[in-house]
Amino acid sequence: MVTRIYGIRNCDTMKKARSWLAEHSVDYEFHDYKESGVLRKDLERWCRELGWEVLLNRAGTTFRKLSDADKQALDARRAVDLMLAHPSLIKRPVLETGRCLLAGFSPDRYAGALREE
Image 1 (tube, rainbow, N blue to C red):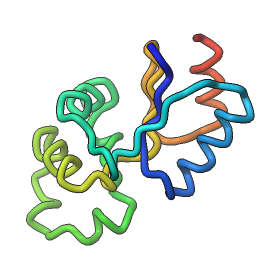
Image 2: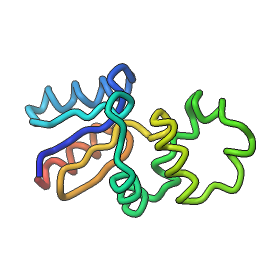
Image 3: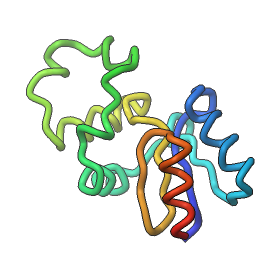
């Protein structure tokens, strides 16, 4: 499987992750889920593997702007529905290598994951 990074093009964390990948000569495909969306089946798989709590970006302005009703009684199904409706709610970046799946950027985690490839 091709290494793929998912996120939003202009996100600062995405820029750091993409720069790290380029500096370490990692070939990858970039998927901008704000422009191209994300498939429900992929989002559900990510939630199963990482946990929806990890994948849902509660720190951003998009989450803060949600209604109180949307923020309450969250579970995996509701979180997936919200992330599909508001892709900015997906933690960035999501890195998928075929052998591992990571949410968020950390140079050490990337180095460890990609060393195993």
